[in-house]
Image 1 (spheres, rainbow, N blue to C red):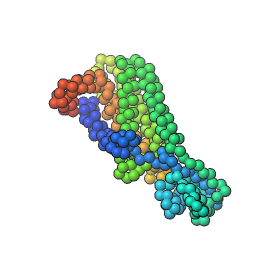
Image 2 (cartoon, rainbow, N blue to C red):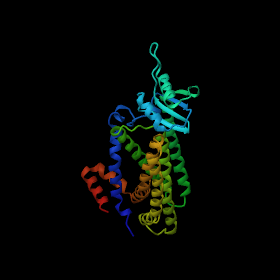
Image 3 (tube, one colour):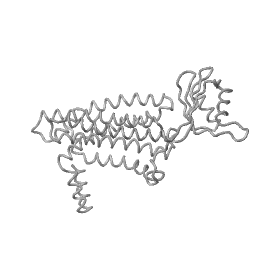
Image 4 (cartoon, rainbow, N blue to C red):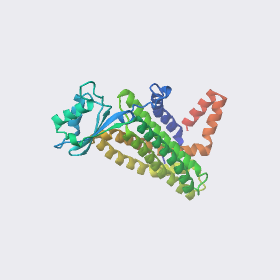
Length: 330
């Protein structure tokens, strides 16, 4: 049988290597160092304008996008809500100067002349960054509350195994691992490719959190069964057996999910691109963390390896490095 648990040190090192670039990207200005998020906020998180419009004839997103680009709004997000209707989200329209037209009137006139906009059916609203900030805060508190309930539920569900609270804490650590990875990737893409995050990104992060816990529970449930079935075996042996028994299911679930997400990413519209990309990244990292991170937390906790490493780290850096190399060599 493949000894997955025996190489746990390498998995933690690999996680550190893939998380570190994203953390650095979020830290460097504009980022945590300048009291910013480290992400490139889209219209949903800044002031902007929203138009709900209807046309005489069916139009597609590309036609509307081309007109908005020509009018000086390449940042505009277009979302179809029917053959003849759409949402347009863009930067704040400028007010009229003197006897001139306001930017909103200019846009509406152009779309009326080129695409047959029904101006009497236009709904206009301004987006406040305060509302966006409340959305982010609500999402944060939602994840925080969910984490507390996850810990409590797993603690209760695993009450027949020794120290059941460790399973809940390990699941939450894996969840944080996955969310930090996805947010870090978007931070890098924002700085390199100018990719913006919007409300769909927040939805994607919440889905990633749910997917991460779901994947982890599949592995943990098998560990629980095997701990009860083989009480005389060491935990690392039981974890390795359980991972081997569930790895096929985890990979199959991840692959089928990815096929659907990639198809939607390639064929879907730009309005849900951030959502699909976040969920696709979450599916990959969630599968990895459930097999190679969450279950390994249980082992190093049971064997006291993490505590020994930090105690050695306080004594001397050289000794800590030696301990890490020893862990990697297992």
